[in-house]
Each structure stands twice: as structure tokens, then as C-alpha cells.
Length: 500
Image 1: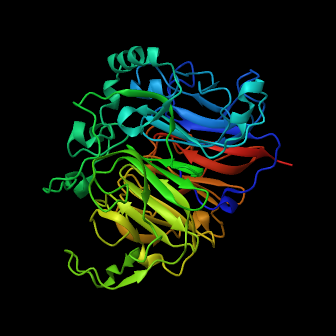
Image 2: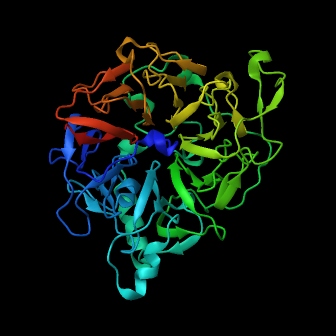
């Protein structure tokens, strides 16, 4: 669940050879289907379509990984046929990385994945195409998505409809009991999303395990909703956007998606029952891209929570959020975050663990400025299942939300409802450049190093063991320089350049 921030933060990457490393829970990546405890290099498939070089890592969903090659192909791998919907969403790609089957003319520049849905953005293609398809290669800023049907908006289907029914049947007949804790409140009541069930984590959650998602008693508007409780798989489709809208980057949460246009407008779709779509209400399902009012109108204000009592009360003084457009987006399990061009952080959605950073555990139904960070320019943000990590222009790291496995990196397992500056000795004099969150773990890239912390049952920290860490811990790498990191739900991917 990567956040997408200012392009300068992502670091300009030269057209030279780069390596991708993986670690964590990718059961189909190795013949023995065991967790990968330390970084293992991933080789591009030997095919013309796949390309010659890696250009970006995109994390991935539950038990599958994604990265982009120099030909604009989305390469997926790591899944197994007992992962149900995730196996279908990954393109059924296991040990061997393979291009996901999108139309040949599609050239991608960004991609993201939720629990079991994917979304990607096109760029300009250098791939040679038949003369009658050449015009399609110049279309940048289009969005393709697939996976859970309720996460996929209306659009032009580009997959083979004849295979949809057999894919669904195959996926759900093979559903692994290990993956019963999904991100659907409808299917699992108050249970939290992503990853194995809490009872399998082998660690008591303390008071936080007794918390339950609050459900409004007021009847909420519903734009659309799939009938029945049976999940359905949707084939890849081209998302129908308003004329002239061009998307620059995307983010995927448990069951919702955000897209950021080239003029700084945020669009959202999918499930919004906790306010994660920022539309001002608990709308359960949005089946087409809707603009999210962040700072475009005079009513877009922050809420000063400093005067607020522990049990709620006055929302304090209102003020206008700094900035004129949005430059970065991130999706968590059921919450979202955006960054304005002035470096202000705004959050919305599920707040039960403090993951909105507003000093409370309330849900935020509209984008709300994190007032305690005003005056600090935020350059990057990422969101996990129950937590949020952001980095400042000075390279500092701030964390808030759930902390059951040390995913905040504060040295304790105490949740934080307000952003807390990480002051771990391991990161002294380090300047954080890129941040990413998995379901319950976190990662940052600094100038030449990568640090991970949080839940580590499947080696997703890359430290050679399965011991959780509650402070940032450096991942050992040889012969390369980390450039960007992207966490899947239970794994981590790293893009690195060779030492010069």
C-alpha cells in the first residue's frame, strides 16, 4: 500500500540496469513455498514482451508481487492456486514472473494493489504496434483495473468475458482458509482487514483487540452494490473517466481506490463505508470515479483538535488548508491520506486506531488536515491496515495509528492518535526519501539504506528471521544502492541500482 508523493521524492531514475529484490510472504515465488526471510533478487522473464530492465516496484496484494519493466509491462509473480481471488488477480503467476495479460498497446507507468484488486496508469509507449493500433500508444493517463468486482468501476472490459465465470469458480473453490480475514465488513462484521486472522498472529493485541468498528445507525446512501455476499471477480477494464481527465498516479486500499490527475484533482471509487472516499458520508459503494473535494472549495478546512476533550466535543477553530492542489495520495485498509502542494497532510476514513492522526479515534468522512503537522512540509505518505507513516522535507519520519506489532517504529506497542516523530538511534542522521506500508509493517529508503519494522511473522522485514521489530531496523544488502521500496500486504519489494 504505497503512497505516491512528489515526483522529486520518488527520485529520478536513469535508464540503466536496476535490480528488484523481494522478501516476505510470496508462497509461489520459490519451489518450496516457504517465507522469504532475506532479500532475494527477482529476474525478469526472458521474453520480448517483458522487457529488459526493471523501472519500478509496485508492492502487490495478498500473496502476489508487482513491478513494471522498461516496456511498460506489469510483471506479476508469487501467487499460488490456493490463494483464491488473489491468485486470479495476479494473473495466476507463481514462481516465474510474467507480464499480466493487458492489451499489447498498454504501456504502464504506475500500478498499485489492494487486498485482491489492482489498478494501473498508462504512459507513452515505445512498443512497436500494428499501424491500426499506433494511435493508442500515445494515450497517457488512462486507468485499468481488475479484481474484486465491487472494487472495479464501470468501464470498457478488455479481458476475455468467456473466461470470467471459470476464473471465479476456480478462485473460490480453492480459497485458502488461511485467508479468511478479508477486507469486507459485509462478510466479516467488525473484524479488521488484511492478512491472516488475529488469532493466527501469535501475539495478543491487548486493549486494541476489543475495539470494534462503529457503524452508523443512519441509513446511508448507496450508489451501487453487488447483490448477495458472494464475491465476484472482474476482468481488466478501462475506467471511464470524464473527458479530458488524465491520471498521473493511483493508490489502492482494502476495497477502495484513489486516482490523482495531472492537475492535482483526486478521484475515488469502491467501498466508502467508513469515509475512506472522502465524500462526506458513509456511502457504501461508488461504482464510478467521483471527484473528492480536498482543497478545491472554500469549505475545505481543517479542524483544530487541540481544544477537544478525550471524549469528543467541540471541533475547535476552522481554518483553510494550505495549498492549491494535491500532489500525493495513499490508501490504507479503510482510510486514505493526501498531501497538498504546500506540504499539508489530510486524512479521511476509518479512525478507530488513530490512523487519521486527528487526536481521536473518530472516523473522518471528509478530507481533514492533520493540524499537528502544520508548519512541517510533508513530502511522502503511506498507509497500512491500521497505521499511517509520513516523511517530511527534512527527511524526518512521523507515525500514527495502530501499533500492535510495532509498525509505528516508536519502540513500544502503544497506538498513537497524533503523529509522533521517530527518534530511533538506528536512523540518526538518516534522511528518509521514500516510504511504504504493508498491512502491519513499514519501510523507508534513506540515502543508500533501507529500514523495515513491524510485523515479521513471514519475514516481511527482510532481516533473516521472523521476530517483530518496534524500531526501524536496517536491511542488509550487498552490491547495490536502494532507490525505492514498495510493500505488499505481507511482503516487501525493493528497486536498487548497482554500486558504481
